[in-house]
Amino acid sequence: MKEFFVEEFSSQESYRRFIKYMLSHSQFFSLVYFRHRENEPLKKKTKLLYEKLKKFKEYSVNTNEWPGTATMDDDHIYKFVCYRAEMECFDWLVEVPGLYEWDYPYAPMDLCFYRDGYCWFSLTVHEQTACLYTDREEEIRELEALGADLSFSEDNVSVEYCDFLRKEK
Image (cartoon, rainbow, N blue to C red):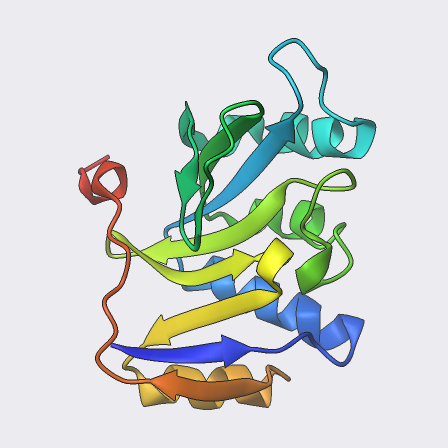
């Protein structure tokens, strides 16, 4: 599998096209909802998005690990939520205005996309790192034509398989 770094998008329109492409070529996407403590409410904008996406939820768990991140922080709550990738989610996802805007307190953290049981796009905002994993040259050409600035990182990388996504739904 080849790994490509994804740079921030030069325009809002190219970012929107990227999100639409990822939704239409993925089975699932995930977000991480951060809170300082268990009984702390979600921030207003984050809660609105959480409520809008609720009917697409497939899986959720409190965890310290998700694609691209493993934290030693046991003092805070990280709720990993996986959703079905439906085009109905598009308008809600692009309410977050850019790739590196997926971060607390203004939005859920670290948008990722999945297909065939693995994470094929991972975003780690606090590291300013976005990676795409594919061997399909056609996808690279299509994404670049949509305005994605991709740079090849390395070949033969292992991808993160998610057992809960590999089950038949």
